[in-house]
Amino acid sequence: TLIKNWGVRASPLFARSPVFRSSPNVAKISSPTETERCIEPLIAVFQRHAGRDGNNSKLSKAEFLIFMSTELGAFTKNQKDPGDLDRMMKKLDLDSDGQLDFQEFLNLIGGLALACHDSFIKSTSSQK
Ligand SMILES: [Ca+2]
Image (cartoon, rainbow, N blue to C red; front, side, top):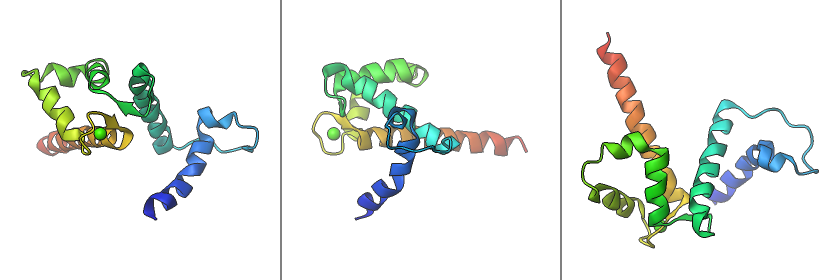
């Protein structure tokens, strides 16, 4: 399957990660690329926040709210209605299990990256 193939392609990336590099069977490996380096902190921050309740594979609603206020404070501050974060969580929770797994979390990160990219494009095109 596609996901399986992706896993195979992603494995050298994990081998380069400092977390996995300590493994004795991993021989000398070149340093990670800029893109590869971007992925690891995303996993780390997700696991750190998701792990508050002992299960680091899913963000509960309480963990999501802490994540939003500590990691995305500038964004959260702009949300005038406190119900906005509730609605955001509901929208991100695609399987409606009340928690965000890493894939659902990535939709949030991807959405934010897209919004940043769009505003960057707008600001650079208006400079011309
Ligand atoms: Ca979910």
